[in-house]
Length: 282
Image (cartoon, rainbow, N blue to C red; front, side, top):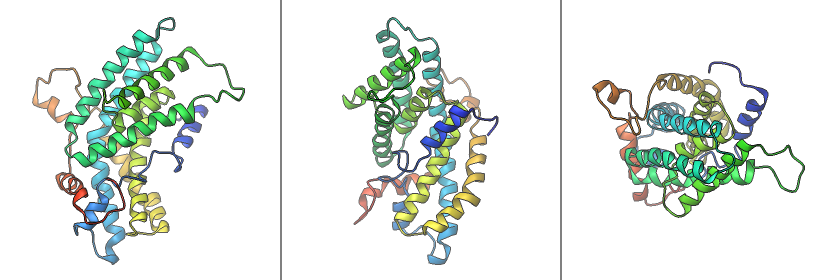
């Protein structure tokens, strides 16, 4: 990544990287379980290589399909927080929710299988709950004075979470991650990079739970294999846009838009519910 994070931002990144937070894959394997069950994994001697190959393909398609939405949501929330109407929060919050909803609906349309949609919505609302319960100042302790920006983003998170509960919006994971990190005032680049890292780490967590690799092998992959994969795919999606609300006028626009790059992974993930027995919900 470019640049150096500030002390506050670095601390927030460490908090968000905590494996105990609902930012991982305790209930979702991102298609890995179905991939293994359907016989596309290597034999026991090739598990490490097979896991690395799966991570490479999964991170590549997730970066191209999800990160543009994270970036656009971050921009919407960051701009709104900077231009907030302090005296009248209801109007600005409602307008921002509508802008986010357009992106949320587009991600719903572009997500190709029902299993991935279900997992994404489940993890998304968990992130907004994390902000409300885990990152808002505790009322029983003395903390710094809440700023107008804090009040705005707090109301935005609560309002969008309520809309998800009412089934008025989808609440997909990339969208809610964008809301969460923008609310915490984390830069877009670091939000994207951390989100991609957490996706890769969640795949390793799922692999350990599936007993295809052990925890030590997982750490080896995380140190030696995952970093270059994440860095390469992060660089590959720079300049990719969702074109939400914009007219696509050329083939170049299509090529620069979000896309799924791994059809086999999508097909196998969509067959998750057909497994005779399964550990993960998706």
